[in-house]
Image 1 (spheres, rainbow, N blue to C red):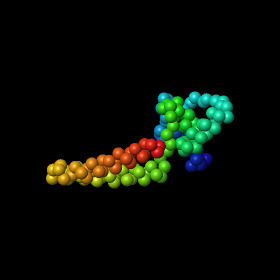
Image 2: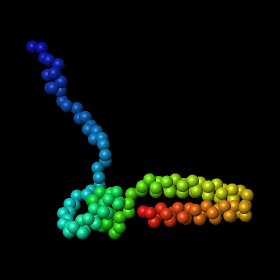
Image 3: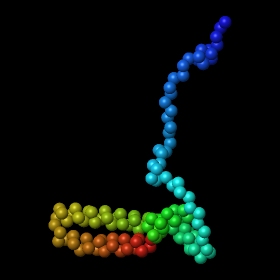
Image 4: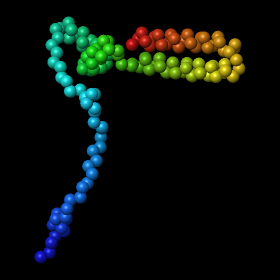
Amino acid sequence: MATSRWSIIRNQPMKQIPIHKGGRPAISEGRRKKYLLSLRLDAEHYFKLKSLVRTSGHGTAEVLRLLIAAGHVRERLRREHLDFMSQLKGMARNLNQLTRLAHAKGFTGIVSRHAAIVVEIESLLKNLRDDR
């Protein structure tokens, strides 16, 4: 009696094929969000929470996590903030070039330009901090 090809393979012992679990690595036990809270709010607190969610750009759960961890919620970076940061990068490049020039040629001619750039950087940082 002729055996089929499938019966020969079926009768052979199975080889151990390593299982490759691709994808995202497992989250550690400390970072896993496994506790669920149920919260009842009156109308005033509910609308205050919704207003924080709307102004911050985060979700409700993330706003509550930030309030628990830090006690305040900061909004996400907006387009204006990114514009401030790009201006700040340009000024930092200029300041770096002036510093290199000052080391090469001396500090006397660079001090006035250096002070002006530092004042502009401080004002941009203040605008960025106060706007957020």
